Image (cartoon, rainbow, N blue to C red):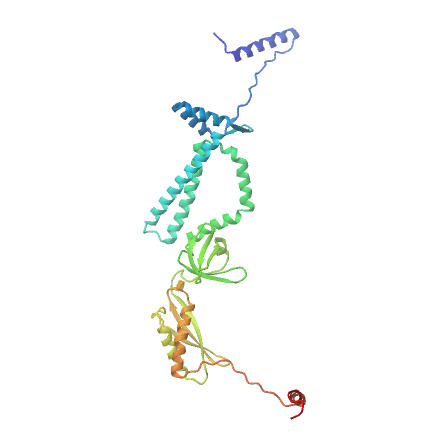
Length: 361
């Protein structure tokens, strides 16, 4: 029987050790051969592709072998130019495929008429997250990358989430919660108050992963973080109904006929096309002011996204013409100044007269 070289060498070394031990009377010591550790390939798929290319064409095989020979070793991991090329190609291919599948599934969801806007948007977000996670796992599996090699990077990513990305992660979760409970949805008209108390009024155009896009009447677009909508008070004008009641204050003089004034106010409100006929506009006597009798016109609209300032302006301009025709006065603040006659006042009048006419004429 023929003994392999490595085995024969080990056997000979063992026999020599036994003979020496017999001469000295010590226990025999077996010599165990040591092997140099082989670097682990970082991308196992690259080796399979290299072998397949070499089988098809010797020229391409030599080129691939040249690129594979240019490598660096980090610990037990070996990374070559060929490995990097395969990784880049795989990432690009997986990203393109994931983008195509994501768009395809979004188009399928848009054709589902049984889903409302909020349900469809929530489904799109969940589908997007699932597709990209699956794409990442598939790419790692195809490349044969040992995920334990990414342990250091995963730890650094965990620290980044804990310190720098917790707001981003919180906004992502808040956006999903907002879509699940249907508290807001695209098309709603909302007013959001920030920490300083300033209110932002506008229509929701888009609910993104990080923020909600709100467009105001002057076409300014605000990006409000999803987390703010969870912790701050939100006034939703179209949550359960799109009907919104608005108030228009009007003051008339004390000398006018308030019944005629009230009739003209209702007529001005009814002339506006955007004001609903049912429920009809109403007019309330609010209070007796310092210089006017104050009324409030109550009216309803169903399209708050088109603005409320233009409705108020239209009603007041129409009411101005009606008041002018009927002779109803719109008061303005007036003040009477009463001066008491005393010695100091007389001295002041004399000083002013002396300055205006030094010669005493």
